[in-house]
Length: 158
Figure 1: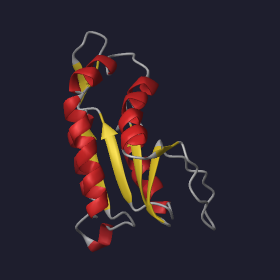
Figure 2: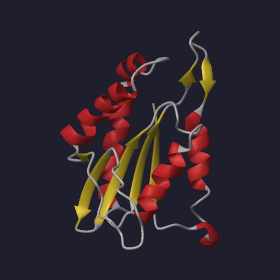
Figure 3: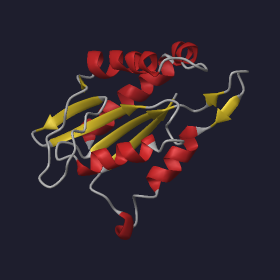
Figure 4: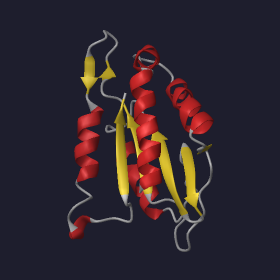
């Protein structure tokens, strides 16, 4: 957990330090790949994550899960990082990312990077994914009946 917390703290600092650059990228109609490229510079460049890696397939599951970023802590232990934009909650991408981490044999931690707001064409906020994602993912922790095979989920709002 110490390594995961250290990575999370570095990512949080990056989000804070580059808030203005992110704001310029995250506008109505913008490419989600531009937002992902911004986060790639810190995740891949500074923190050592690998990008678009196909996870180890599991017996009985038909999945070719390919998260945005993966960090190997040790063999069979790691962090998945996903960058979301428009479909974070409307298309349940947050829950799909949690599921991807749950079934991954290579990862037990999730970094989910989501917008604080999504915008309408007129510049007004359309929805606020960050608080909804934090609440939805939080529901999977703290009660044995709802526990999943994910040790931690860090949600970062931009």
